[in-house]
Image (cartoon, rainbow, N blue to C red; front, side, top):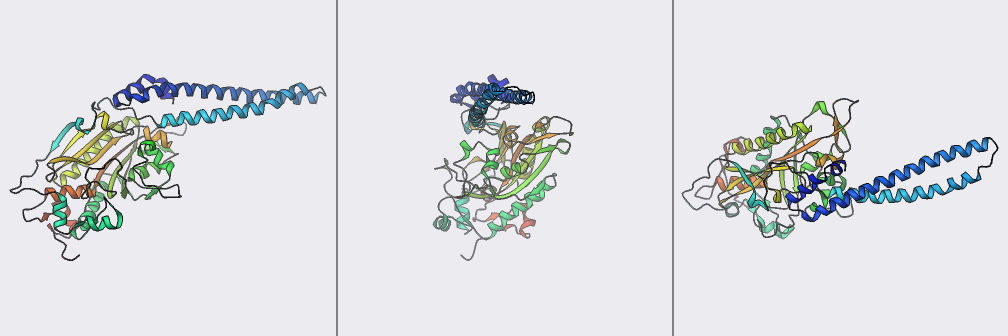
Length: 427
């Protein structure tokens, strides 16, 4: 709140750049409510001090055997006044907190202006799209032709955007996970398998729930949500803590299934396994000091690039524009893999610097020494591999004319030396 109070123009300009013009007037309302909150709180504190003073004066008069009835009458009125002010303080405080939670992060100055993903700025490309002596197929035709993906059976038992993986594609999925864990552990990340369900408070520290509520699955009758990404659980493990700054940066690698409603994504990738309600992911997550976070952001995307390069998948990196950024990140890179079946680059990795946005919401601070004041940590996250999307990229880039699929060299050791994915021979 102090930042908003001292930098109202910065907050308003940030909303303008994000295209959230409707929220600009709310900033003035927020500051006004905060002033009221502080005024009412001050009035309540003044009354408490007055009550204490009167109590002492009454005691002194009684010790002297003097009449204290006038002061007693004054003192009797104060508790009700304090109670009324405390109620106002609570209501205004809740209003201020709700307004603050609805404000997006302050964007970095390097974020390009734009309305949607078509305006994202290309930073670099790596690799050349493969040339085929035949018309390349998409992953749906290839994998269903080999009996490796069964969408129809999944729709029968669970509905749209679910799947059965079969045979060698199951092995390849877990080969990707094992390779990713081995890869990121060598970078100094602590491997972590988090809880697959989180309380609302934990999720609310990671995202703006007003924007994210229709994306996540809630467990009926319980204060629990299915994990949308291990990022949320990795953040929440340190909620309400003061961390030792001398140990920074803290680097975690989370591995988990992820569950998302994909609300609002109707009409896009409704077939196949590119955009589904469940998938597996290995995630990078960092806690660090503010002065470290931009270097850590570049390290995260470098790790992601190196991982995709080992798979020899052509890709490009884009700097996500203002209109496509979302509320949480101050800056985000997307890594988009080339998909021959679609003839375009598609996002398979997101890499975000969330600065202090999540830390403030989750109450995560740090200091180097016990006698120092605390500061907000910075948090960053990046996909290393969302395996179903990685499988799509591998299937389409490694397809052969006969419909078979080669296995990337780096994954063959995790596939017992197999060089090609075999069709499922029995259903």
